[in-house]
Length: 236
Image 1: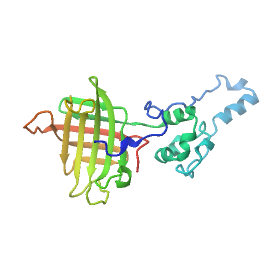
Image 2 (image 1 turned 90 degrees about the horizontal axis):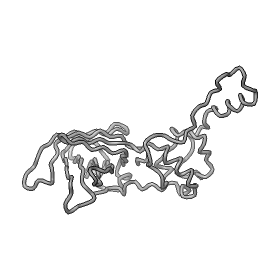
Image 3 (image 1 turned 180 degrees about the horizontal axis):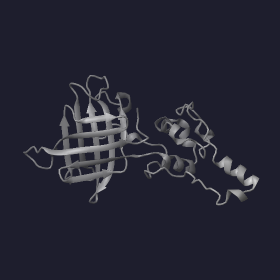
Image 4 (image 1 turned 180 degrees about the vertical axis):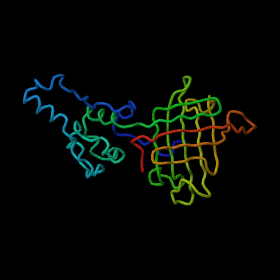
């Protein structure tokens, strides 16, 4: 189940890679002694610090007025930017630049001797972000494994509505399933327990015993671990 609509990104090209892209490399003259005054000024201008963007309200600013070539990406509130109504007014080149500058996150799930990796991992922290009265935390990762698309999630249910990640009366769930064939899936592992998922900032780890839902009539207890980092588009 997808608990929060996979954090739909209006910037169509987002998530195309995990590396920060479109950042110009710094070019230094091979012989500073022979650089002209004009070229020195140009070099100084190209290396000047990015303007301060810490005071920008990314949810309401007109995104078409931002100088995206000089922005300090560490100061960009990507979740707010994505929800900004002027995001659709950006040209395709700018959308690609923003998308390539976002860290999509990553996840590695190991169950027994099997390991699955995803080069994206989006999270929602709190009931408002998950858009659910049940789940205080939810996440989503997609990847391909042996020709099948698989979905990986870590979720925490808090029916008290307090938005807790740890404490009594919670349900921690980690699962991976084949989403190409629901009737005859190639993969279907699940872990449910009162605890097991730990959240520290954007780092999500989990450890527990997984059941293979493909084996009918028996409950396995296969040790497994999740190591993940939530991407920049995650909601809080």
